[in-house]
Amino acid sequence: MSETVPARPRPRPFWSDLRFLLGITLIVACVAGVWFVVAAARQTVPVFAASRTIVPGEAVTSDDLQVVEVALGRMEDAYASPTSFAPGSVATRTITAGELVPESAIGAAVEARTTTVVVTSSTAIPAVVGAGTTVEVWSAPQLERGVFDTPRILVAAATVVSVDDDESMMGSAGAVVELVIERADVAATLAAVAAGASMSIVPTTGAE
Image (tube, rainbow, N blue to C red; front, side, top):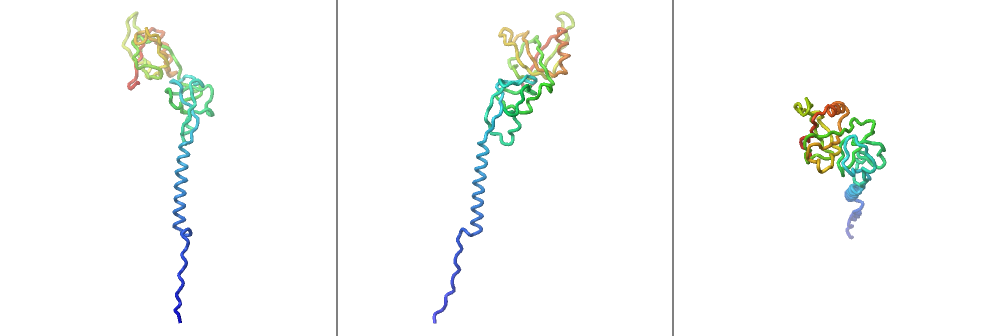
């Protein structure tokens, strides 16, 4: 009489193993995550960049802006775009040429706290001074014809719009400078000009 050999259990298919299924799931998840990150990095949106340097209080028009495609992700809403830009806006701070335009850098004209004035410098204009440069305006009150008091700061922070481009005047006394100043400084500035004070334009520390 032969001895009965117990039947061996049939091996389970490897694809039914829980560890195998978990491994496949993790691989698929990793691949999908990498694909999502790469796809998000490649997604660009149209926003505005400044075509030139725009100073505070200056009107911003379509001629001052150019549309560029950039990948911003969640920062998309922080920058001005063709869909968000409102006609009649003005710059609230200096926007340098080529800079992406933040929404916070432009606003409605009625909200502007600055204005422009023109002064004639009695001293040489440093070569570093140009559109967008932050400067101090110094004033020496006129005591009598040709005699002036000690200079003092009239406007602590002004932004240059333009300097007279006449080569015979650049770098010499008499250069005409257009400035953006706070409205609170307008009265004192106009009074100094009307009184014939000697005005000087001085770049602030770190001016480029």
